[in-house]
Length: 335
Image (cartoon, rainbow, N blue to C red; front, side, top):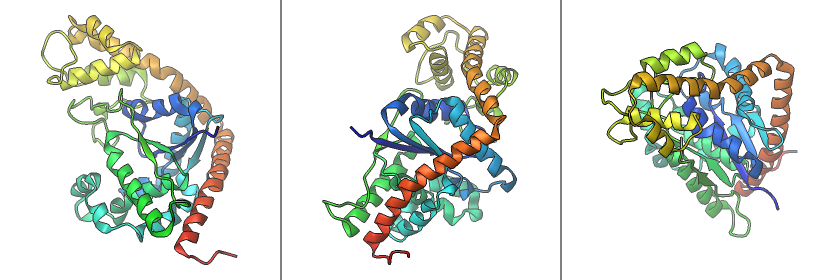
């Protein structure tokens, strides 16, 4: 029986933090034996906001190495760079011409980021969800692992697929497969260390707001020591204690315990006793990832071979889908 296909990716902007790992990549690793997986480094998405061209290529390498270090297995998964497969850009243009503008203007993430960028906001930022739709639809993905903040974009992808199928396909021969979301509940939303009401983010100006996967033990200790807490004695999972709830949740995951056990262990603790426990659990969990990453980064030839093979596999699938779309839209086949 053919395995269902999964497609996902992360931008090569800044360092991956534990929120990215717990909300996305750890889930990829756990599910990968059950699916046919395509995991890309989405470098085309990375330039929808101002970026540094001097670091883009190296950040792309770093991200691919982290995929492998976190446990992405090439026996089950394909790793590739988005911009290496030109079908992504070409399909995005075709979908642009078929996507109503008002669908894009109501995207919440565009509204939020546009406010921050002001007059410098790019057309690419508005068009980001169409590029994401192209990424997904090119690979006939059955399911897409998404966080809560990307659910609206995936719904747009589904709407685009249905629109194209209705206009240019048929019930017997649809042009696109309509994907389903795959949402992980536990650990899917890790909050900032500086504000327990805000999601941990690579774009936050404060490094103290997040723990990166490649942070040294000393840096992790410093960040946990300085993270925001409340003055209440005794720790508990409580909605009205966002920082406490977030830190206990992290300890639950990194110490590999269940919520009830952690609640009992920490019920009478103060922050002075709890923070070292959390620090040690995070350092211990990240150590094998960091060791594997450093090993991979010393062998550029191996990493190049992974990305080259990934490009070839991705192209073989993506180009078939692109050809199907162009046929449906009535284009003259190339010679």
